[in-house]
Image 1 (cartoon, one colour):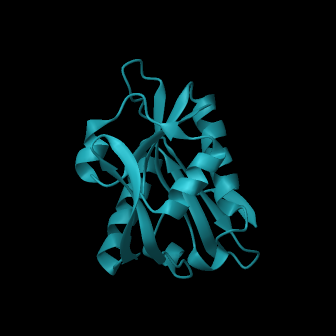
Image 2: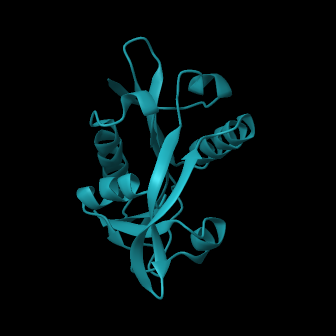
Length: 174
């Protein structure tokens, strides 16, 4: 796998990327406590979702943030991560990890861990103390983040909660 910074994003970049995630168990906040609940659904991106993603990632690049991809020897994108340049938090100590995804056909190969470390290193170089992650609530996704050392966010960013009310708000100390 080759990891490299992405300078230009187009829909064609994702031609070999498989977003699909079959979700069965999710973390849900009930009475202020996190609990596991059965909530089966399939998470996949429509063409409209891909178009929105392309615009968001290009905006991240244009505003000085990081977009990095994991590519096969044949040049096929199989994972990516993005981090915003703009500081967040009461002391501007967070950088926002806005996306990290690994293609369904390449999960459980360590690609996500490498991409996460690239994001963490970049955020540290930008002067951040922590990464902020508004994360999918699927049990597998939470196990990934918790396994890396992520914990519940100290300063919950309301814009993320409003955008994705079922997401788990996490942070990672750099």
